[in-house]
Amino acid sequence: MLKDITFGQYFDTKSIVHSLDPRIKILLLILQIVFIFITKNIYALLLAFLFVLLSVIFTKVPIKIYLKNFKAILPIIIFTALINLFYTNEGKELFGFWKLTLTTGGIYKAFYFALRIVLLIAISSVLTYTTTPNDLTDAIERLLSPLKILGLKNAVHTLAMMMTIALRFIPTLVEETQKIMNAQKARGADFENGRLKEKINALIPILIPLLISSVRRAYELAEAMECRCYSVNGDRQRMKILKCSAKDLFAFLFCLIFCLGIAILNYLF
Amino acid sequence: MIKDSIIEVKNVTFEYSNSEKTKTVIENFSLNIVRGSFTVILGHNGSGKSTLAKLLNGLYKPDSGDVLVDGINTKDEKYELEVKRRVGMVFQNPDNQLLASVVEEDVAFGPENLGLSPQEIRNRVDSSLKAVDMYDFRKNAPHHLSGGQKQRIAIAGIIAMEPECIVLDEPTAMLDPKGRKEIIKTIEKLNKEKNITVILITHFMEEAQNADRVIVMNDGAVYADDTPINVFSDAQMLKNVGLDVPQTTELLLSLKNSGFNVDTKNISIEETADTILKAFHSEGI
Image (cartoon, rainbow over all chains, first blue to last red; front, side, top):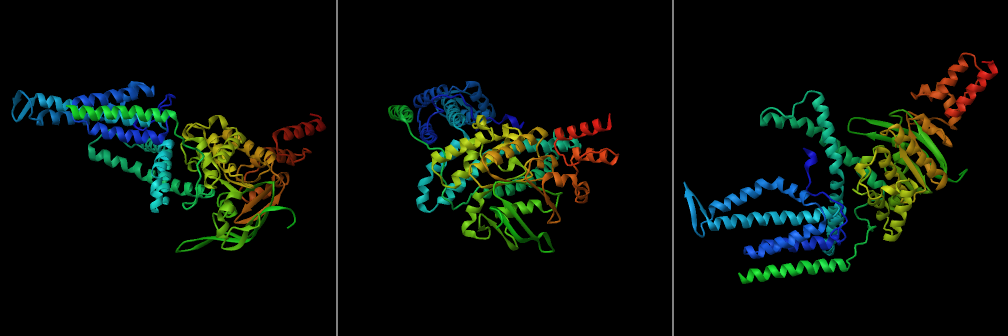
């Protein structure tokens, strides 16, 4: 159950997208999300679809992995589609029963909104599949660095540190949860059967040991960090130097062309 | 000062206290660590050895007495980071010391805190990883490594700060025998090749074999302080403080007790085997 989380995973296929500056990737993702949201008609959205598809292909990550991601959010996509399908009263009425009517406008909207969600998920995955969590936190720290002028220097740095540590400890805690679950199972705990209330109660003997051990870990980690000369107020240097290159400029232009295309199509239709 | 000492512990007392009671863990304790030496501190659980370790780099401050690192008092808050840089510390659980998801970035954490230039950080990370034989794993995620490998990364993270001295607080307690060997080999290599002062705290006798000096602690005080051979051959003393006698010494002692003329001052398996062989030959067996 815990192994199925693919969102936020990194796939090292060494594509051109991998080699882009993570800061540029984040900015382009935000830009692209904005433009996917402001598409007004299906033509503009299809252009966005083309862009997302090309980006996905450029990452060299197998399409199968992207599709796996959609499986998890399929209920949301279907729900959105259904709501739009039956609550839109535009265009020609095809047939109706009880309070629900199916219209051509409804079909159009259902398709439109479902596709939009799919595109948003896919383009976000492009970022997370091609950027290591560390690069991401690093990029976020640097993108937020203008806030330092406002006297929020420690806040930005602390946030980045928290993200780094959280990412580092996810696999450790998953492993530990598994161990505790096995230990409780060996003592006769039953996590699979019973009513919802019983299942929730069965989780308590997992969560409490996990919480206690996390606190202990945090304490030990803090001591280890102190031993490595960490201080919140210190002037930290970074080993990695992030540099924008010609590739990043190219990616930016590529993205810009599609954004312009979407804007023009929005205007025309 | 007799010899050039890196750490001086002078009449230190340390106590844990909560609202109900105070417990003195270390009482009127003095110790000198010679620069470049390899010292092993032995003691059973609760003998105060971990507390001593944390006193050595200023993580804990003595309640009375002083700890001097390279002449700097650990109580001096102005030089707190300077003390921590000089005396690096490796703990028992490797999982709770690594904080980045990529090996090389974790090793870079210390030097980054020191505010060095990116190029200098890079050089130190590479040379530290090579020193612990983990350079090939620099792009890996820590949770994919074995316990011994993770602990070596933790050691690399410390030596990347170029400390004068490393204190290792039971670094092998959570490892399998293979991981234990890796760690001890790494520590001995660092001591010899990089001339880093090593203070190894442990309760595994075998790990003290190649040390310059063994200190046995009991109830917050020094119980014995001698070379490994002298300490280990004193079986009665070791048993008094609840430590196991090394298997080789145990064997030699029981041979001696049954009338064989053997020298009990041996630690390594090879030496012991030779001694036994010689004894058997002289008996005509």
